[in-house]
Length: 277
Image (tube, rainbow, N blue to C red; front, side, top):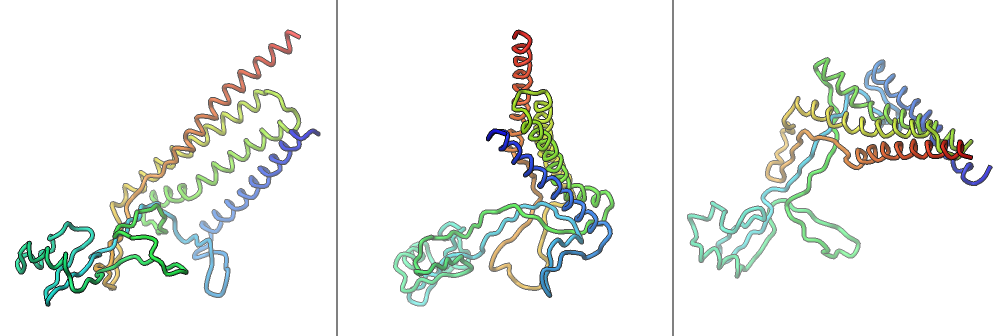
């Protein structure tokens, strides 16, 4: 067995291990979610993982700090200037000071103090390497929920496991490709067919992701935090529906369809060459 065949054999082994490992993982998770309540894998006295008493919904998280700026003081007078507002928009002082007085306080203050919430970076040298704004860029996350409608439960159940299922199918067809290549490194309709199926599965995965996240997002407009703790003067936090679509994986799927066409063409040329000889 030459090096190329050994590489194909090694890849076949890796895909086989991943294939069966994901099957066990998927079976375990589905079993726990269907037949056990508040279940999970215990990792300590008070902690556990794989909490399956609910389903994950994708959301966009946006966080911004409020009342973030400086308080300028001079001769008993003070003006607050917030980072997210233009100068002189503070209505508290609009009737007390003229524009010239406000400019004088801000330009020649006897005291200047940070007000509101702010981000503080701690580093070993205690040096200030960054100046933060009050805006924190949103990111994607998941929130665990318990659906109250049967249809929504089905949608969320499918959304929870379809990616793993499609990944298992992709590994199955990859396993078939490497199983053939470790025996014979030639053009084959079998390889072309399996590559085409893998490409279609990658495309299907992204299309389903877009459809499912759009469907789930139609059930809510935003999520609020209901708490007696007064944090409104510190920051704004919001959760909104999001669409999940990996354009790179979609393009990869399309590329594999092109590769499968080229493999079929190569197999035809190889067959014609063999007949000519």
